[in-house]
Length: 213
Length: 77
Image 1 (tube, chains in turn orange, purple):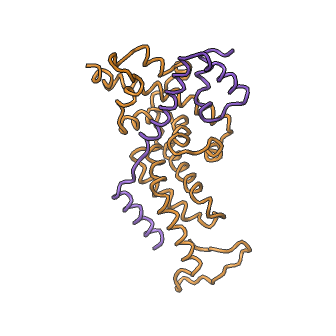
Image 2: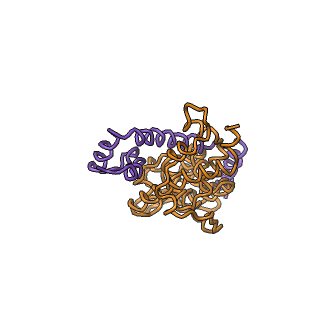
Image 3: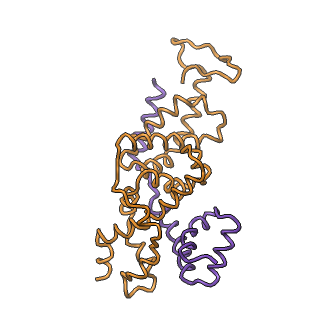
């Protein structure tokens, strides 16, 4: 964390390669460390949802970028959101680099899809008096992860940030550098795709047959 | 009066508090007489909770230890 200077541009302690880190650098290191350690679980959750098994590497990359840019963080209270934005962008870059392209599902095909009605119409658990809850109970965490990974990045990322990590839609727009209207449209499509993929996954994996026996 | 398809399209935005006052009023009017769409609302709420609960990740201790070690390396450089 070299070249740490205050806002007036004055270095408070002269830097000397032989003298070790200055007190100011040491203080910055300590603040960065506290912030990073506190936020690790959240950063990992976000990365895991966005890039799956590459989450640990993505968080490491994000920590490195954050460490190098820590002197640009002006307000400590913005630290958690700032770190989250770095990890989101690292994950987006990784997504692009992998050029992962899940089988595209036509938005038109899911435009009017309703999982609620699909479950009623198909009635997979004829003896259930809580049909919809029983449907959801068939899914373990690994299943949900697999379903999310079927969604293209542009739908999965806003969906995860809003409904898993609890970001407000305006924050997501800022994080992803997109107009709010675009984020809202992607969220809507993402929800529809998620519902559709939940049903398709349940059919493919025999989750419904298993229960109906 | 909005249709069921229009109501369903607005449900999550309704739960997000993201509808305009007019859209919200139109949806609530529809929900006042449509039991199926009321079921849709309840299920949408369940689905949101399900997504948040199911997709939350624990940070495994060994991963945490490796990430902490990477912080040590950063400070040492």
